Image (cartoon, rainbow, N blue to C red; front, side, top):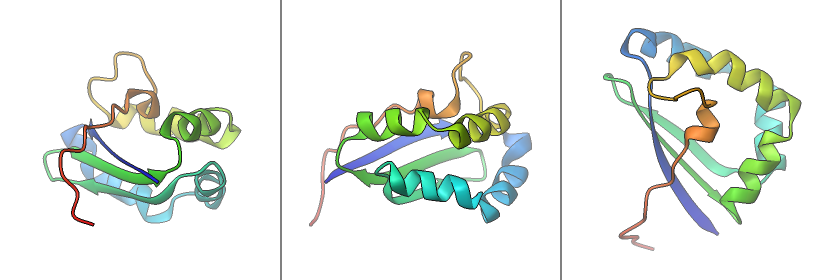
Length: 106
């Protein structure tokens, strides 16, 4: 199982609304994530907008591509895109750049 961690930056003026939006993620979105291989998926948000994502999957590129092919993901990304800084025209999920794991205590 591949462990993936990534960073994004939520606009500081949208942090509270971002938190609210994630209190009730659409059932269809949660089901699509599970069906496309996103497991043990968590998001952590610091007050200054630093967002840390973590998930486990067999193949991150395949899991991301499978989500890209879903209608619910397109709708979610369209709604959430304005929350983020420095996307350079990309959808938030396309801007995920996995960090290199340098240590893991099993």
